[in-house]
Each structure stands twice: as C-alpha cells, then as structure tokens.
Length: 295
Image (tube, rainbow, N blue to C red; front, side):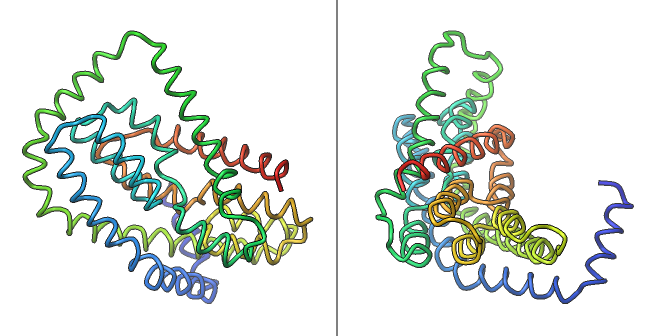
C-alpha cells in the first residue's frame, strides 16, 4: 500500500473512532474470554508433541499427528503443526500444501459447541454438519494426493530443501522446548490482533447503508466467523435452508481472520497461502451446495 492509502485509513479511523472502539472492544474481549483459554494450552501441547515426533523422525507418524491435531484443535493449530513439520523436514513442502486445507479447519469442538448447539439449536445433527463441512476437504485432499502421486519425478529443489531441513532438525528440536512457550505467546498475540482488526472491519461494513442489508451481513460474516455465524443465521432475511447452507459454507471457509492467522503461522515453511485460500473457497462452495441438497 502507498503512504496515501495509509493516511486515508488513518483519517477514517479518526473520523469514526466510536466504530473503531466498539469493534476493537468486541474483538479483544472475544480473544481474551474465548480464544486464549482454549487455544494457548493447545499451542503449547502441540509444540511438545511435534518435538517428540520429530525426534523419532517418522514421516507417517508426523502426517498422522498433523491430521489428528489439526482436526482436534482447529485454527491455527493445524497450520502451525504443518509449518513445524515442513520446517523440520519431516515431510516435504508439496505434502504440506496438500494437507494444509484439511488440517487447518474449524474444530469439531467449535462446530459442536457453537455452530450446532448455540446457533442451530440442535435442529441439525452434529454428524450431518460435520459431513457437510469436512467431506469436501477430504475429497479435494484425496484428489490432490492422487494427482501428486501420478507425477513420478519430484522436484530436485524440494528434495534439497527437505534434506537441508532434515539436517537442521536435531538442532531445532533441541531448542524446541525453550522456544515453545515464547513462540506460543507471540502467535496467540498475533491471533488477538487479527481478530481485533477483523472486528473493526466488520463494524465498518455493517454501517454502509447503501449496501443491501443481507449483503452486508454476508460480507461481514466472511471476515470473522464467530460473530458472523450468529448474524447470518439470526438476522439475515433469507429462507431457512439457504441461511443454514450459507452458515455451514462460512464455517467451512473460516473467515478472513483465520486466513490472516494462517498466513502468519506458516511464515517459516513458506507454504502457499494462495493455494490455501483457493481450496478454502472451493470447499466452502461445495459445502454450500451440499448443504442445500441435504438440509
């Protein structure tokens, strides 16, 4: 961005400080009350798990633990675990890019406790919701793996990167325990910053009077899913089945906030955020049509 754009944004924030304060307050309280108590312990534990598995140098165990921890813990733990394994050379970047959309997703705890219970009021079963959200990711991941296996020759550059990471893995692993707490605190702070920024953006979107109300709801919901899910289902003026399908599609997408968190977490391994976003959008669209068909 140019300096002029930054100045314009700054002037906008100063001109409507009330919107900034309300958005920032909501985002920071959401982070403090709901995100930190759940996410920080999982970050610490997942780092220790990665350390132990990396010491064993088992590629299959690393892949299994990535999928398990990602499915169990959700954003951005799946991305963090994938990033750490790729950086340590447990599996190559190509594999990391393939499994990242599947592993870095809305967790079953969030889907069950918030989406199914709080938003949908148990009108749809947990297993149906899980099917609608996760089936596209499983399908796309399997197709990507098959296409990847069909390419017999691997990139020599990628091999060299993996070997280089593998040679450094012992040194990195030795430092892992000392770095786990500091790294987790830094990353949970970034998560809070992104949630706050996205909450401010949501407040501004909702204030754009010339944009149709339902469109404002959908746009703001795509920014941050925790608050957006409630707005889509309880305030959007749409047929029930369309609202529900849209809710599940947005849950599958995860919101701009989760993408910003993921982009920060995968900085070390330099996994492709463009591919990740494309797969998220594709799977969200598939979840929407699947929801319309099933619900």
